[in-house]
Amino acid sequence: MLNSIVRATSFVHHVLKGKINKNDVVIDATMGNGNDTVFLAELVGPGGSVFAFDIQQIAVDRTLKKLVDNGLDDHNIRLINDGHENIESYSTGAIDAAMFNLGYLPQGDRSIITKPGSTIKGIKSVLKLLKPGGIISIIMYYGHEGGMDEKQQVSDFVKGLPNKDFVVMNCYYANQGNNPPIIIFIEKMKKDSCFQSECYKNNGF
Ligand SMILES: C[S@@+](CC[C@H](N)C(=O)[O-])C[C@H]1O[C@@H](n2cnc3c(N)ncnc32)[C@H](O)[C@@H]1O
Image 1 (cartoon, rainbow, N blue to C red):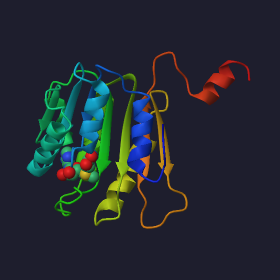
Image 2: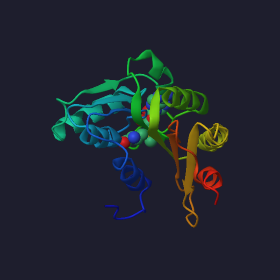
Image 3: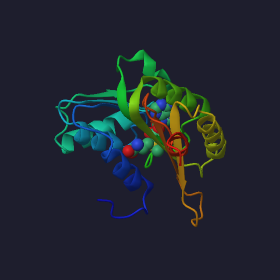
Image 4: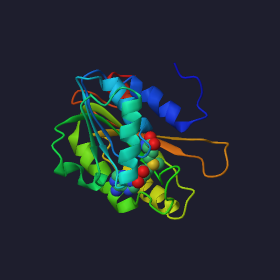
């Protein structure tokens, strides 16, 4: 149940809960304080796998503590102190879902931020690894220095994805100030699926 859309993360978790199943293989591309890693670990359960990435050791340490505190440290979770631009160097195999949460580490060094080049490389890798029907979420926080550039480049990149292969949904807060977060979902189309307007056309609507 979704209680509120006030927090972008609540909405993203709500959507992903409907897509991620026990035993799935998933990626947290920006581990940070470990909230999404814990969320993913609970969803996939002990039979699933979570690969979590962050360039900061402090993020890995905080995430490990959070996993221990939640009794999840015996699950199949790899905390990787490396950038998501290197995802393809790790043997994840095909994945069911991935999460990106862009910006800086809350309660951390605000000068260490996700950057457009590495973020887009990470998204491209994840889209390659994604199973048909799989989904990725991206929350863009962009109020900090450098954030606008990343927001623009990531938005342009996702808009350009071929619509026969991917459905891209862009959600934004229409009436909030102070650079409210933007949420993007990308789902990889299954072979036999078509976007609704195409289906209507084919079915003679
Ligand atoms: C907004 S925080 C993520 C919050 C996190 N999802 C959570 O649940 O707490 C963004 C994180 O991205 C990390 N980051 C920056 N560049 C990165 C990169 N190239 N690869 C992976 N993580 C990166 C930062 O160190 C920071 O911890």
